[in-house]
Length: 227
View 1: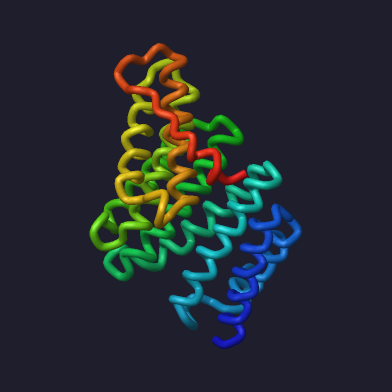
View 2: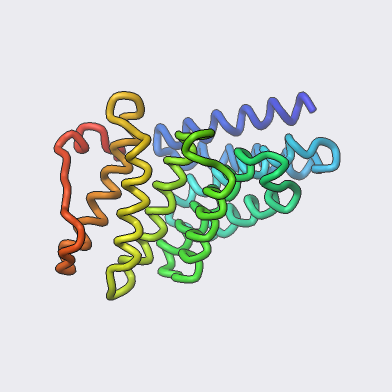
């Protein structure tokens, strides 16, 4: 138990380091550390630790996929999140279940974006929507907002690949929902990232001649946007 917790802590630190430095080697080490726990620590021994490990593994694989453009990482991440979701429910742990569903959505969105797989993107939308059934703006505002942002991303990816504007307009709605909670002062990076997604979706709509949604651009976004 102590070894598994320490190993998960190491894996989490390696993932953060890999994301911060954009170094995939740290992410590969993080994945390896999580997998060692999965291999040696069955969920029957401690379900909570096993679930956390699978979610951590999924997040590390998504981060690795974002850096090396290998769709296999997203597929493996989706498998990890699904494994976690098989052994607990929203009733057991609403916040944790929403986190796993949101992670699954991110993995599927990454896969769909890399491979132009509309079915994967549609599954991503469904996963994020499932997450939003378990948490609310009132009881978990930050996670709720970040899930709305992720849902917006999946919808926008579908929108980029269709001739119409329905999914892009839905993406705008989700981004704006997230921004109703996030702020420049309290959550500047999350706010800027979401604002950037909103502006991109609005820009795509403007290029398609949509007159239903006004295009917005806040100069402050450039200061805070992630690389």
